[in-house]
Amino acid sequence: MADPMMSVGVADVVAALVLGCFCLIWFTHIIALIYGRYKLHRPPPPAFLMKTEVPGVSILKPLTGVDPNLRSNLETFFKLDYPQFEILFCVQDNGDPVLDLLQQLKKEFPSVPCQIFVGGERVGINPKINNLMPGYRASQFPLIWVCDSGIRVSRDTLTDMAGHMTDNIGVVHQMPYVCDRKGFSSLLEKVYFGTAHARMYISANVLGILCVTGMSSLWSKKVIDDAGGLEVFSQYLAEDYFMAKAVVDRGLKASMSNQVAQQNCGTYSIRAFSSRMSRWTQLRVTMIPFLAMWEPMTECFLLGLICSWAFNHLFIWDPVTFFIFHITAWMISDYLQFRTCQMMGASSVNKFEFLIAWLLRETLTYWWFLRGATSRSIKWKTGKFRLRCGGTAEEV
Image 1 (tube, one colour):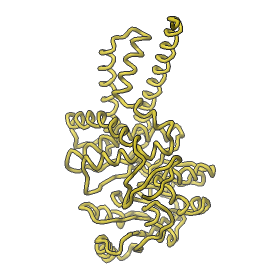
Image 2 (tube, helix red, strand yellow):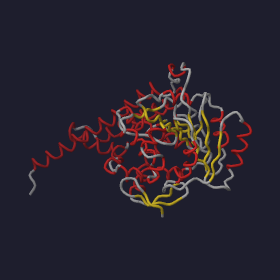
Image 3 (cartoon, one colour):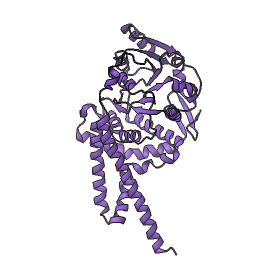
Image 4 (cartoon, rainbow, N blue to C red):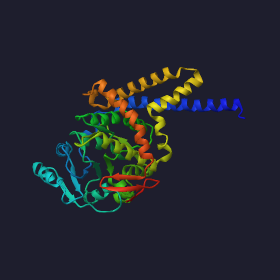
């Protein structure tokens, strides 16, 4: 028969651990809110703007197919207000209709250095790196800006990113966000990237935890070459994480840009977004399994249920009252974070729309995690792969 005193002691310890996790997670809320207000949407560093000579930048753009927003997105790169850059478009298929669009843009902006590479170079299993290799080999500047096709930029985006690149910085990255687009599926993406993802991304970078998303990131080419070149990372599907790890392993740091990465893909749906969330879970579970398996415990509803028990056990608080208070406070914190991510706090989303999208995101996240954590087969870009522990993969 179990000792009653031992059972009580174990429950006390577990409740205390839950309380500690609760405080830690709310600490990330506070960090993200404060630092987000201070950091995001600030103008480029003034000292950089006064320099007489700035480093040249090679922009690598992997492209596949044409979506309704692609032309307007690409035009923003031709209009960048930066003294020295080149655009290197990389297209995998010789019959891709995006080639006609690129030729039109070259004629419309003849003063912008621009090259088009077709066919890629197979150096590993990562389709994105295979596509980028010819452009990477042809790049002539010391900084490489890898930027996905669905990203839209402002005229001073490159100035802002390059202004953060100092001698002890190896990569400058943008926090992912979403442009204003029509439809509920776009709102769902915007709410996710402006709340849960923003909180994790900002707080991780403040606390020195490696968290770099490669959809828009500026790299020191020397660092990548010293690591063995871009092809070294082709064995991974999440190449951005391992490229950032190579930067840190060489004693350099990662810096987050003041501007957010404005995702503006023209084709989007709830199903596509759900698949994307599950894919990201699959990658995290194989790369950092111990941390990834704790993710559901950090989400609002499950954490609230566990903490309702813990606070009732430790302080005899009513669990229903605590749970309602917890959900309300979390939602308000997320709404403030969402407003911070919007340019100058402006938003076309009203509070009711935000509430519906927030509730759906908080509910679906457990399904996305379960779906991703229980599968090793993944569809990525143009291929199907089986993930291995450590982040590597094999093509199926």
